[in-house]
Image (cartoon, rainbow, N blue to C red):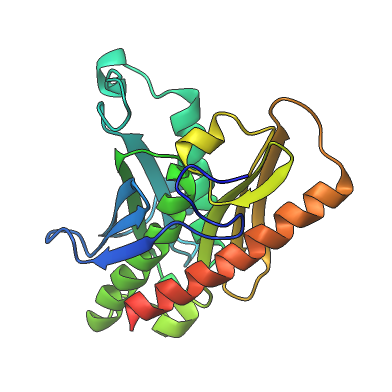
Length: 241
């Protein structure tokens, strides 16, 4: 049983991380998972939200959006609709949570970083690609902060672990890694896994889309996801080197 793009079940799509893709942000990365392309930018602001002032802690948050023609048919901009959709809000919060898992907010000092993840082209796995690319953009932004003496601690303390994410799923009874869109829409089980570079879980989102799954399938998917995140962590470190 073959995959649409000829990959093995445990094989990632070709992954590329292009740093400094945009000249203005303190950190920017174009991340490509196959045909999925997401631009991740990190913007530094001195100061923190009002509810955090005086705490000595920094803040990292994220916003996610998709260009109108990132998919096969055009969708209206959410700014025209006058509200942020539930899916967009949920993914933004996921990215923010995932990136806060790799930082020490005390070492940040009272500084903020906003990670904007804009999907230029979607072919499945946009949220996991966004997390993987946003980590590298955040790392570069922290390096920028350190050079200007903005951090309260050392750069290695401010970003003390890496984080990456990948999708997994069950299609026709087979566990597969890094689903493209054609697989994602037919998956019996769909899951997103966020891991640190050491293989610890940050978040696991999984559901039976058209059925249920047993413990053995869950274990197989988790193993695939951890292995995929390990590969992505190596790609991240190679890009940062």
